[in-house]
Image (cartoon, rainbow, N blue to C red):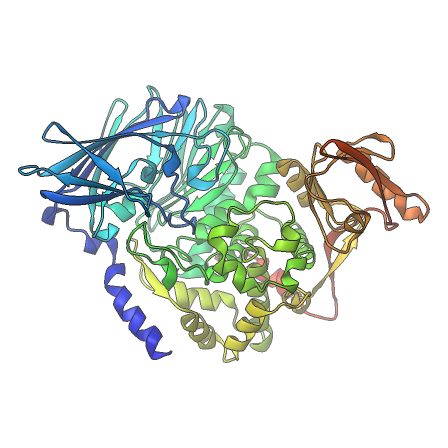
Length: 630
């Protein structure tokens, strides 16, 4: 390891100690935060903070760089009603000219604290993750950092916080924060560090259920549900058994658990954006209202989301890239290792979805086929290496879907998964099946059970750990895949795993479910075009027939072969081209103008699937099979 890297790690390690050790509540007065969420159904949070302070200049921060979001996404635009007082008298504040997340004030003589009152205006139709829509009339997700100010100059793991939460009448809440007391609709929490506080969102709702899952020994695990309807809370015994299995299989994969308890927070509403984000002792999963009771959601499209976010408790929270292990919420993050943080998590999330039974092996293979085909269509890879998408992630998370195949987006998720599949099959092949990526996970993320802590790592640490499993030139292996601008994506893992990418005229059940959930028409494998269900063109693949005909994003397809467009009619017209004579004609609107585009295409419907290569052992099947004893 280079001396510069060693020195950098020695400097950062002291501030990344176990949160419970770094925080001694008896040595400093906590920030007191009282959050009133009783107006959540009309998209309004109110908060009152008492912040210990000494007389003189004081800078208060509103969180900017949010852990897990990898970007400066703190939604300060929706902070409202900020007022400061000390000893009952108003205190003037002034926003910094450069850092718009910093507020400067002067604490008067004799004062021991600053009191702040503020509101957070919850958006209804913009943003993603924590800044996105977070409430409906019957439930809410509260990310505490939305209503938090904290003093500059002290690492967040050393700032104690004592919070309380007021809910609408009849609502309940679930969170990883330790509860001190509950009385009617008010919950008082125990003192924790600001780091842990911000990392422990609360799921609140009128229709609410908390279901214990997993083994009886070890830390407790819960499926915490809030839904817009009471009916949506139903969880069948079979589905619960898959979540039980998920906890067991994760334990077998990593070998230890770095949390005191774990809660899968699942908000089920069609009024929220459907996304998810990780936390150390919980995950914030925003799913469709019928997630637990509809086969399309329960078995297919979003079934991998909870396993993905759960993996992050080990990969991303416990072991974290050095550049993401910042001491507060203001210092910029360096995101170059997201191909590990997110790419490996994507891969292991898929693996655990299969091993737990949430995905069948067939669906898992279909998922790999979709990802492989997607990677072949990312022509932006010929100018932009994967590593650049990780470095530019803070911008790319906000990029548009239009022209994404030319530009590339956060490709390190799915392409990262392909790289780790490549590594897994390589280890299995070269070791004769005696070793696998499971051994890497056990060594790199294992250790002793215990409460949350952060252990940062570098690229060199990853290479060293892989060599500990199997001696190989992993540095070159990884650098080649991260820096390549080859048009061909890294599909060696699929081929080595005993399968090959092929195409069928029939959509897989997974692709049908994904199109339905995302309300889209995915024709990227055939004519190279992605549309919304109402005909708006989202993206076209350079070099394929839609692109050659002149179709582009922002156009809207109104008719196919002279008839108003529907997904079914478009696919029927596409299938008809297989006779080699029938043309596909699209009437499209481009602003105030209309034009008919004739696509030079004659292959009919075409959708990705995996085809077995009997000449090779089925390593992918071995990867997907359950490992823990039942």
